[in-house]
Image (tube, rainbow, N blue to C red; front, side, top):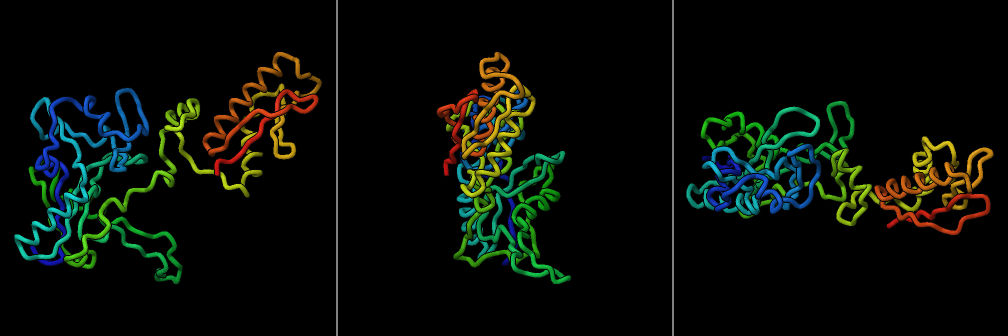
Length: 310
């Protein structure tokens, strides 16, 4: 090893060394590794782990382990990386960075790549914000996740069937931190729940909007100054396909009125009004809006107040 090297090790050997091999199946271990379910299709479960990772089967692995056993992720991959870094420094006298890697799928692309689940002594993000490209354009949100890029590159050397759980990347000493600085770790690459635009699968999002429990609550609160515009859009969506009623916003209240020459006592009007109200409740929940009944004005079927949880 040389100063400035980056040592990459698969999470599986780390887990094995830390006693994270358990008897049983993925299905039996999955509940304990799951913070919440992101998506499900048949027996497949994509979950957010307690680490904040979104992985199929919670990253539980049944390969390269004795039959009837599975390997769980390290409890704290960043802590594991810090221990490895300190040990390598003690053994070799070299200042290196350590990345703990795992394999994950991508929601919009086939196949899998390796990424960093733990890191120590490394700038995991290379932030170019504020710099300019060769054409003088300001870079605003350019921040390569170099820890993930190094993890993916190292997998080409380690391979899946080569029994090589380690790799060394040389040539990016500029990313390696001082000996006494372990850095933020790979945890810095985990997007916070409140900023996650894709926190639920499509089918699961519909189910969550139907349940509307606090455990399911996701989405971004609607700022108060944006509420009128957003409310108009939600009312339009809620009324789509129900010609018997005409929902609209009157003095910040959603009022559902009979359409045309219909009256509030017509059966199809009552059914449509109820459907619109339920749709609004589901749509509003996704925007963290509370939908409540209020006094109904003359000639209307029902009226609803919409308030932001912000």
